[in-house]
Length: 453
Image (cartoon, rainbow, N blue to C red; front, side):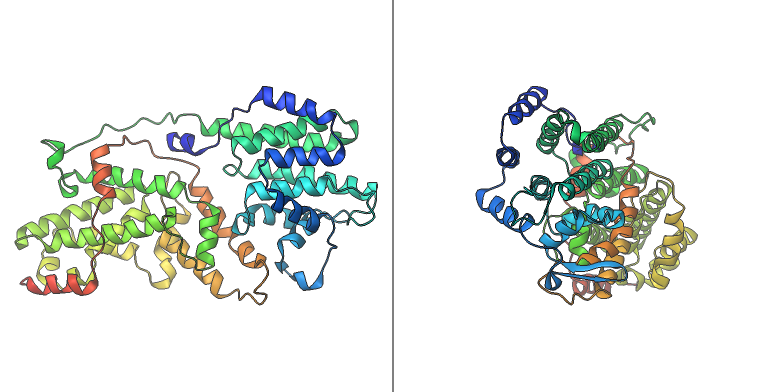
């Protein structure tokens, strides 16, 4: 759990700040309370005016800004999504949960919290606002309490300590108002459950860590193929699982929209996959004779087998991609004499992409944690979702596309709930992070052709 510890937000809120701020709110007017909270959120004057003018004064629904189908909301503007989420006369729990799962595709936690507070502080005495009476306002406020409470229960990573402080200030203030008891209960229960989840993430794993097995000699002389296969598999798994466990829903939505974001965790995993597979191929092609080539091929088969044992399927695909590269498969003499033919064949079959990764999908569906799944399979699923969901409303948020991604996101988040108990060896991690960039296919084929196969 050590990696999760470093990534999860701090549980510590500034209790003195919360106490003084909530006490200060008691003496403020209705509008000044909202200004106070938005200033704590560091919402700019321009953004605040825009959000207030739309969320408190625009009517719902506006036909040109929200489109629905049998499945729910197909596309909508940000304003109409928030108004639908917080409408006074209808509670749609399915849409609420969908929204909380997908909002990072088009917004951020600070903007969502600001929007909910703006709706909460709509003044029904102003005849121009879209909440016409105190009964409707009470319903909207109950919705908002439920939304924030649910959000805290299902979202582990988006709440920064600053956001938690603001929610604490808000809930501490409404605690003094008996008319807000239901709202207070919804949010405070959410906060309690959120903190319980966070504390569980901070518990160190009790699983025993196996003793590292390092190469002989000075570490400056180490290469990846000099590291024992079992230890290289462990170190690859540490590297892959760290990147994989940091993948957030926003990155997945970018893939579904076919947006490439430089330096995202998914892109780093993809780039390292290509570079490392290329390194594996080159490590075979650059051996001076057949005997050494067979020895290195046997080493990589052993590494892939060890990766398979510890459920690092991303690593398995990486190595197999390298040893089954066309520049290698054309070397018939090398492959005919490989001394682990059965293992080689089984690994290649496991990574077969035909039948939509059928064999891999069957195995991973039954795998116990911890596990690093193959991200290429997820990326293919997300791209397919994009292809079958044409956005007919270009100027609106393609909400239905993001909802279609929820199942894939849930699968990924399931694999992010556990970590590996291996010792990190800095030198080997450095070697892994600094493999050369992949070479073009033509270059590798030319090298292969020079070898007497």
